[in-house]
Amino acid sequence: MVGAICLILGLWAMSVLPINYAGLALLLLAGVLWVLEIKIPSFGMLTLAGAISFCLGAMMLFRDADPALRASLNLIVAIGITIGLVTLGLGRLALKAQFRRVATGSEGLLNELGLVSSGIAVGAPGKVRLHGEIWNAEADVAVAEGDRVRVVQVDGMTLRVEPVGDT
Image: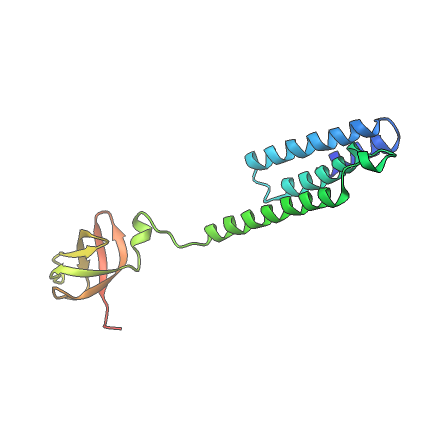
């Protein structure tokens, strides 16, 4: 991405591209980079390159001797900073989501607390109420009806539980 930006800037510096075409090319490159960010997991690097390309292209596109015809440098920088901050914020949310505890499926049941609705004897399954559902449960020790248990393993439709002391 840096190479593409440098190539366009190099063509402009050698007067191969008129300034307006170079700015337009950088703006188009920024748009392409932002679309590619959606399709390619680059962890925000394509968006950053697109923001730099956008800022450079916007400054070059409207460069004129008359200051009234130029794009405001403050506006261009503000847009570039806003794009960067939004990207950082979204990246932070995505990173935070990666480390959240699993909430669904059998992994979501691990370490959850339930209430024994039918006593569990060693070698004989009982019933446990968990998340509004009644599950078959087994334990290594006998657990009386009404006791609280913690799920330590899920095996198909049967929970392996252990008693929990009052805390």
